[in-house]
Amino acid sequence: MKFRTPLSKVRGLGAAHDGTGEFWIQRMTSIASIPLTLFLIGSSLYLIGADYNAVRGYISSIFVAPALILVIVVFIWHMYIGMKEILIDYVHAPALKFTALILNMFYTIFLGLISVYAILKLSFGV
Image 1 (cartoon, rainbow, N blue to C red):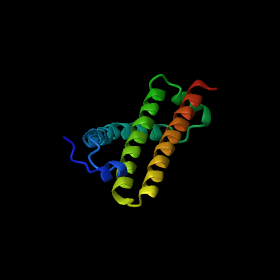
Image 2 (image 1 turned 30 degrees about the vertical axis):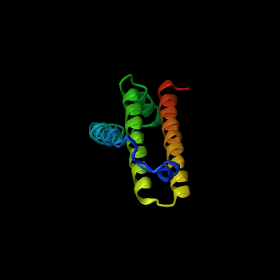
Image 3 (image 1 turned 135 degrees about the vertical axis):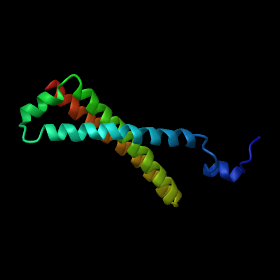
């Protein structure tokens, strides 16, 4: 039995049935960010004063490059969900909300792809 009016169906309002999943993903990415942030801080402290070749050698390590890609994926995913929630809650004009949500999605995908590309380029030396 559906309790949505025809007008709410047209507007796209009502229960989305995926809020709990995004809630838990947001919490898991925030928990995963703790050790990943410590890894980034440790790597940054280790590389203080290093030249380009030393940094490139460090990033091309078999453990560091995947860890950095994991950092990017977790941080970008967390940012996407957080910004999506903010936009849904605080942008009230439907056209602006729709546009902002689409731009948020494309921006996070673009930022993630560019970041992963940079890490792969540094690690493989292309």
